[in-house]
Length: 240
Ligand SMILES: [Zn+2]
Picture 1 (cartoon, rainbow, N blue to C red):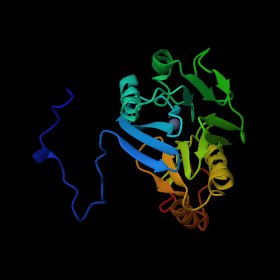
Picture 2: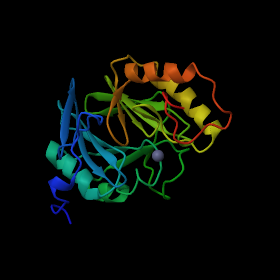
Picture 3: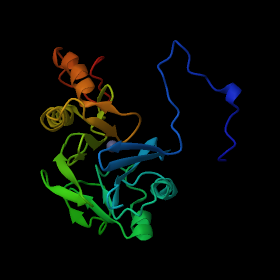
């Protein structure tokens, strides 16, 4: 029942002893040059909704299609745009449920790595390849192939902003199904993401952002340690 949440008095307030935790506004808007990032949600499984907008032309794209279509559309409406593209980071079920509805609502085309599992027949409109650039108005989004969390996870870089799906979060990599996948994921992060400038902002599929510089510093701790040969799952740079 939206609007009838538990009374505020019953909720734990962030105190001095707990990590700062900001409640997200309905929609958050961030500028990186002509790129505007509109963050909605969370929806579905705590998924962020991202609409990326070229403010010079008004052209826009969704990053993934998570949760309720309405949550995605609300972010687009707040930005005053009609996104014509969906850039898919990976095919997990929580990143894809609104694809068909967003295609129907906006005539949006789905861009994804054709090697990524999880899409329904006919959903993929435009296959993407590592290193290519996709235009959104005057903006250019560079496709970075970052396999590991899934077989063909993809990140999208524009200016000092990179949208990474579930490949990298504050504190560590996204969940890996076995050690080989973890090793592949770490190699992708080091090769493609840690090569970016330290002040590049990392926008993950769930939760808050981090920066490349902060993440690299955490990873240095992980890389300095020995690890069990079967390490996988929910790995953290500082505690695994
Ligand atoms: Zn995932």
